[in-house]
Every structure is written in C-alpha cells, then in structure tokens.
Amino acid sequence: MKIFNIKTIILSILSIWLITSCSIDNIKPIAQLTEDNVVFDEGSANRLLNRVYNSFRESDIPLVQAGLSYWGIEQNMGSALNGTNTWPTNEDTGEAVIVRELYTAMYFAINNANYLIEAIEAGKASDLTDPRKSEILGEAKFLRAMAHFRLLRTHGQFFDKTSQYGIVVLTEPMRGAVSYARNTVQETYDAILTDLEYAANNAGSGKAHYYVSSTTARAFLAKVQLYYGDFENAATNAMAVINNTDGYDLAPDFVSIFENRWGEETLFAPYVNGPEELTLFTSSAFRNSCIPSDYFRNIADLSDGIADGTVATTGEPTSGYDFRFQYNYGADTRGPNSIGKYPLASRASGQGNTFYYARMAEVYLIYAEAEARRAGGNLTNSLNMLNAVRNRVNMPLKTLSDKATLLQDILEEKMLELFIEDAESWFDFVRYDQLGDIDISTYKSTLSDETKFILPFPDAATAGNGNLILNP
Picture 1 (cartoon, rainbow, N blue to C red):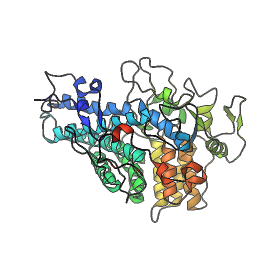
Picture 2 (spheres, rainbow, N blue to C red; picture 1 turned 60 degrees about the vertical axis):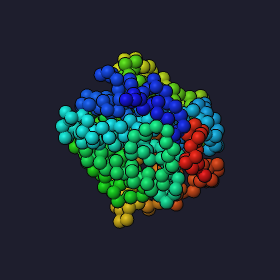
Picture 3 (cartoon, helix red, strand yellow; picture 1 turned 135 degrees about the vertical axis):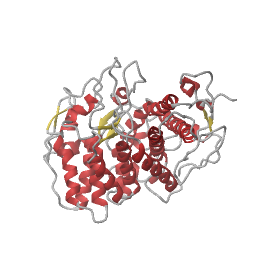
Picture 4 (cartoon, rainbow, N blue to C red; picture 1 turned 90 degrees about the vertical axis):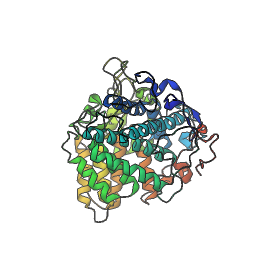
C-alpha cells in the first residue's frame, strides 16, 4: 500500500510538489504511515489535529497580513516583504513568495483536515468517546473553514455573493494529480458557514486559547456572517460570544492583551514557546516593514476629539494621540520590534510573539456594525458596544448622531484597535465600499479599479491547471 504522505501529493490546484519535510510522516509512526493507519486511536487523531493547527503558525501568514496593511490605507511601506514592493500601488505580479506560501499552507491545512474528518467519521479512532469525536470534528471543521475564508478574502471576490470568482473549495482529501475548478463565491460561503455552524455547536469549552472552542467558532461565524451580509445572525452570534460563560472577555487594559498572549481577550492565537516550538516570526514581519499612513495618524490624532498630536524629531508620537497608537509607536513603549503589540524580543524558552486571529474587542465591533446594519437595528446598542472598546483605553466616548456617522466611527475604531494584526482594516474598507458607505478610491486613487480588491493566484497555482479560471 502506498505511503500516506500528504505533502508529496501534487496539489493540482497549486501545481506544486510540496516538500516532504513538513509531511504527516513527521508524526511518530507505528511502523509505516498509510491512509489506513494514520488515525487509529484518540492519540493519533490528536496528533493529526495538531498538524492542522500547525499550518496556522507558518511564518508567511503574518508577512502577508503586514503586506496587506500597505495594500490598503492603514500603513505605508517601510521595507518590502518577499515580493511586495509594488503593493503600495496595488500591483501584484503573482510572484510574491509570501502569497505562494500562504496559499500552500492553507491548502495543506485543508487537506489534512479533510483526512482527519474522513477518518473520524469512518470510525477509525475506535476508542474516541462520542463527545470527543464531535469535539475533534468541530475543531477540524473550524480550521478548514478558517483556511477557506482566508483564501476567499485574498483571492476571491468575497464582497460579491453573485460572483463566479470564489476559490477552490475542498471537503474531501486530495488524492493524486487532479485539476480542480474554482467554486462560486456563494458556494464558498456555503461551505465555510456550514463548517462554522457545526464547530460552534461541537468544538467544546474550557480550553486554552491556542485551541478552538465553541465560543471561538461562534465568533468566527459572526464575522463570516458580517462579510456575507447576514447582519441579523451576525449580531445574534456576536452577542452570544460577548455574553459567553467560557472565560473570554475584554481585557481590563490594552497592554496586557499582548503581554499575556492567551489571556481572556484572546479568542484564538497559535501556541508558541521559543525554540521548543515552531515560533512565529511575527516580529520580523512587522519590524521596520510598516509605517503608519498619514490617514491612520490623523485618525489616531482626532480620536480624542482634538487635532493636537505631537511627534518627536525622529517621528514617534509623543502626545495627543489615541492611546493604542501612541503605545504601539511611541519610542518608550514600542519595544524591541518597533511595534508594541509584539513585545517579546527573542525566541527564548517561554517566549515568542504569537499572531492574533481573533480577539474579543473585534467581536464587540462586529456586533456594533451588524446591529447598526440589520433591519430594525438598535443604534444605541451598537454605540454602546463601540464605546465599551473605547472605554477600555480611556478614550472619549462617541455620541450618536446618525447611522452613517456611527458606521464610520466603527470603521475607524477597528483600525485603531486591530491595526497590524490581521489586515482587518483593508477588508473593512473593501466591504464598506461595496456596501455604498464610502468610495475607496477617494482614500487611495490606485483602488479605483475593483480588480485591485483581490490578489491574483500565485504563479505556481496556475501552472498546468487549465481548470483554474484566473481573477479578472
């Protein structure tokens, strides 16, 4: 029987032979790993699940997110990141190494998740209790959904449910060299939402925050529903997360979020522990790579209602700015990596900067936007959630004037809260443009063409795969 080695299968959607050094063969074998024996009990199922988790610790993931910060409006380029030198003008040749690596890592995660789901559903881990079986399936389906969603946001027209330009959705293991056609955006969302709904009901509770829980899954479900335009359910699920009894909450202060890494604020951030683990190179992704744009600096200056921000002769903010901006970029607080959100200087044991996929503050702001947008939404409730985030950093509370102003306040608040984390402000600006709230080209002239809203497939993904229709 052939050796089960996922990373030596040709991913025809990628047309890449993936390296075997990161293969499933790294799981300690009984004798020889095959499709029949890779999952045979709870321990082996957990090891394969950990392999899926590990895909979200790839170093190029934060590199892409840093690059998207200057693809959008939030940051200016300090230094190029592996082929992103044209990104400030929204040009991409399909040759950026970090995009190829992100694309590969996400499909590797999807394929491993598919093998695990298939094995568990076939009963190959016979000692699994029914609750643990459902929990593993919930975690695996969440991770599969998150990988599909990340690919949809970067390479598909996520902002148009009627578009043919979704991504290749895989819900079964890839075996051999097969060319796959891309799914529509609607089909892509259907698959993602189905997985997240299962995970929200089955992924379990009481876990460390580098694992996925049902609460984590419900938070992502609310986020995807917001993107999808299902504002009613996005608001409902976001509120359920805000009211969770699983130990997640807004941290009492902004700084402790990043010093503690997996405290109450963090919904999901991969585990890192210096040389003992595959440490994320988040610090190298952001050190000297991104510089706050004039637009972002102005928002931070006006956050307290007064245009009085001052800077040092070397350019660092000194006073008059939103606390979050000043803390992260101030000379005395920005830390060894030139950005306070990634405060650890080394990969010594017990250290290592993680990468934040979701925090409770974002859930508050998801609720705020969804509640403001849904039919019959309560703008006061929306405002209260926005102000809960601002109150945490002692910034003046916003007042309610009209829906359009409130939505603009939420857009800017998400940038102030989440900048240099997961490129959320870029995707927000695209969504707001498509919803008719803003004209994104007035913020950045090179974004007058909608074809610049998504990245092309990496060159390696299109070579030899005639079924993969290119982006317009």
